[in-house]
Amino acid sequence: MPMTLAPSEILETVKMLQLQNLDIRTITMGISLRGCRSDSLEQTRKKIFAAITSKAERLVRTGEDIEKEYGIPIINKRISVTPLAIIADGFGVEEMVELGCCLDEAARQCGVNFIGGYSALVHKGMTEGDLALIKSIPKTLTRTERVCASVNIGTTKAGINMEAVSLMGHIIKETAEMTADRDGIGCTRLVVFCNAPEDNPFMAGAFHGVGEPAATINIGISGPGVILEVVRGLPDADLGTLSNEIKKTAFKITRMGELVGRVASSRLGVPFGIVDLSLAPTPAVGDSVAGILEAMGLERCGVPGTTAALALLNDAVKKGGAMASSYVGGLSGAFIPVSEDAGMIEAVAEGYLSLEKLEAMTSVCSVGLDMIAVPGDTPASTISGIIADEAAIGMINRKTTAVRIIPVPNKSEGEWVEFGGLLGRAPVMSVSKGDSRPFVDRKGRIPAPIQALNN
Image (cartoon, rainbow, N blue to C red):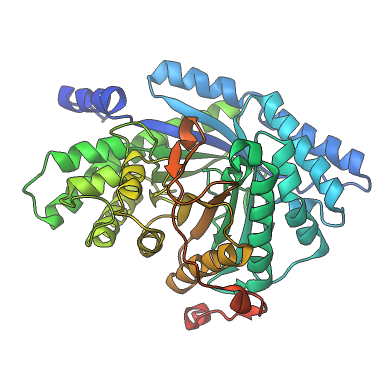
């Protein structure tokens, strides 16, 4: 029998779209570049450009058509590619920069706003190609507008590569300094991962994993505003009831993402990959993950109980999404980016939310320390220490964690930085003054935990 929808269900969905900021945050086409390597830089560049522009030439138009036909906002159309360090291994730093510019040109040609995959996977060690790509990141992000870079420095199976962690502290500092005229904005397109997933559609960490097909369509949805209304409508419910209602709402949101993904897959002739149900906030009022936590009964995000409330939210979102699709993947859960969430911004500005509390929250959220502005004079070793702490949380808990941090040149604690658009604005947060350098300088590899031996 055909599925029928009650008028109340139709009106509920319309309300989600029109009043509660529900949207498809991104359609991301993953594209394999594994056949693009040639003997010369020029031939490799041509093959990469052709592979991307031929496969993704109709991506933006298809997304716009679906948006109009179904009345569902699709905010971003994006591309992810095979980690470039794999394809370009053997090329030097300047050649890596040229290939990064090639990615940027291809993204511009296709009309997408970001392209991910300027990436290296170095959780157990670095090849010459990995090292060349990592060293090229500051210059590449300075010369491009759409390229997003990521480096995976740890996994539960391999442990944490502290040589890479130490290097990334310096790379982040250099990237900020090279884009100092724009408050270090280059760092907003650079993320350091532990346990990076191969099918993540969200930037800046998206890349097309080596276990993926030649091309795929991954969907990222977002609905903090919808979940917020559910929680606000249940002020007296116990937490078990609240979790169940969030779960049911996440199911409905995921079904919408599945529909869009399947339609896009069919029209583009590309296999459907996954739905990533991540509550990705925006600076808009009413579209805040912090707002959801506060609606649960917390005076302000960051007060005692915040980590528990976030754990409940993340768990309910994952359970609801898993029931709605056989192919939920990516990150799926709740994001806590500071500059992109109006409630997080207020909590930091009012002194309720510190870097240390955010770190505790990352043990139960989708990703990690995201879009955090710190003083420009923060030492590279301190940034490396922050990365190591976050990677340890991910490694021990068998989850994805990440750091996207901006040491804002020439700004100090309490000053503000404006990135604009979805990147938002944020107060510069305080960082511990203690010295991490002797620990970071030991390098080597932090061994994998006992959980790694579960075969």
